[in-house]
Image 1 (cartoon, rainbow, N blue to C red):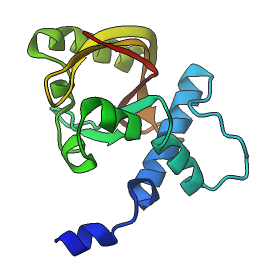
Image 2: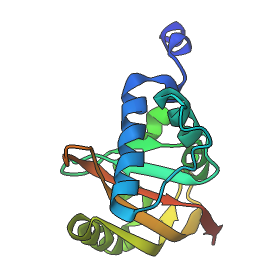
Image 3: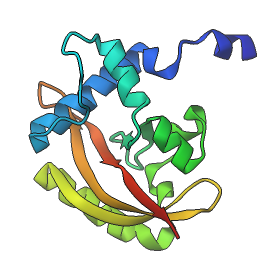
Length: 164
């Protein structure tokens, strides 16, 4: 098992993550009119772009369409903030990123996002895997869609958080 994990390519090199990264970038720009990532060189390969997104200094997270949506992407900044490894993060129901008392507000925001496509300037209280609470500030939450309009879930990005 350990040899298998060590032989796997870095997360951002995995084909499914490269595709998902492209989906996140496309849907963010399509819905908000702004790029999620400032790409320095337009000739960068999808893998180079996936790496830049994974290593970005702001948070990018997403979850799928399950009845109880499971986190399916968190860049390195998100993994550090929630203090989880990739495997743990991507098997966690996204509702667990908020305390039970905050989940109703979180659900309201996700419902609003489903109907509007995206919301900006969201502020919410979250909790990481070791119980540290923090506010996310000025977050953008959007529907993760592909170029055919198929919905793959929802995503969020923010670069400002404060521990409480």
